[in-house]
Amino acid sequence: PQRDVVLSIKPVYSEKILTGEKTVELRRRFPVAAPHGAIAYIYSSSPVKAMVGTASIRDVLRLPVEQIWTEFENSACIERPLFDKYFEGLEYGYAIVFDDMKSFSRPLPLDELREKFGFEPPQSFLYAKQDLRKALQNEPSSVSH
Image (cartoon, rainbow, N blue to C red; front, side):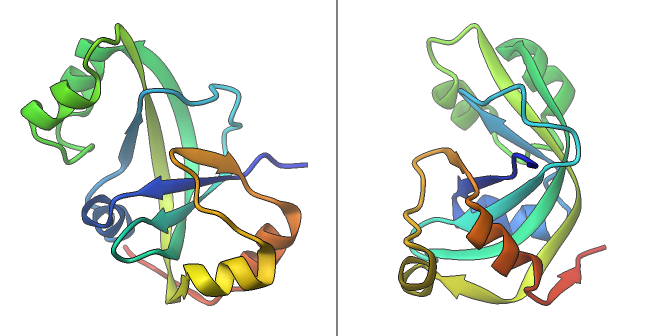
């Protein structure tokens, strides 16, 4: 089975992913084994608290933190002080490269996700359960670009 993931992302960043402005998500930890072509379900964290769309994972790169900044400064849409604070104390980090970003025609609120799927938003990421994947595959979406 495909190992699709649910990513919790702050609203300021999830909006930029779905408009196509942000094409790289940064993480302190992430399974490099997430396969090329897996789907990342974008959960926009508080105050939005809703599943807002999907992106296809083109690549997952484990790189030295300084190299992540050099290569992805613009496509990660983050300012240097926030970047430094986020990766503080780490030598390596992860860059998740997205393409094919799509917004759901309506965000799916957390209470609905809990009720239908027993969904709890992850701190960072979790593997998407099959029933959730199946339901979200059928969500009408719009391609952002």
